[in-house]
Image (cartoon, rainbow, N blue to C red; front, top):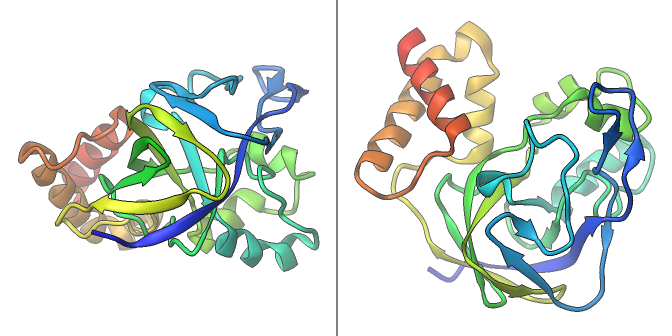
Length: 225
């Protein structure tokens, strides 16, 4: 495949900020950095996550967010959504990140990354933005989730690099599509179960490896339908 986008900014933690949540600090203060950055098994070199129980690890090593989705939220928030404001490591342009398929692989610089799951918004995210009214629900309903990625082949990447989609599984389930069905409540149970079955079949066939979170949720979706 040769679908192309571009990395507009590479972001990593600037500083840990005090936070009212149980962890006490947040690393969501990501800001663009100059030059090339190493992407390894657990994410970008010198990046960090404060809440390791819910963020980071191999399956959430890198978070990508599209400039097109960020622009959607600017009038909602009445502010510029600068690169890194949503806690993303990669701000992209020209690529439908939320529409990426689970298991899709991207080559960026000398690294290869694999789409694993959507971002689930939390109260920490809302507090980072100054607690806009109903922010978690608004972000969920918009369906512009961005995508978490695992690093399949470590390498160096930087702003200006092309994002090349090098492989795409055949199940047809996007991160945003799965996120919408999973969060639709009883009205979405049948669609979530259909998507879950497709993802699990693709995993059984070796097309992709489901993250523990996706493994758990797809199992629940199949069981509750």
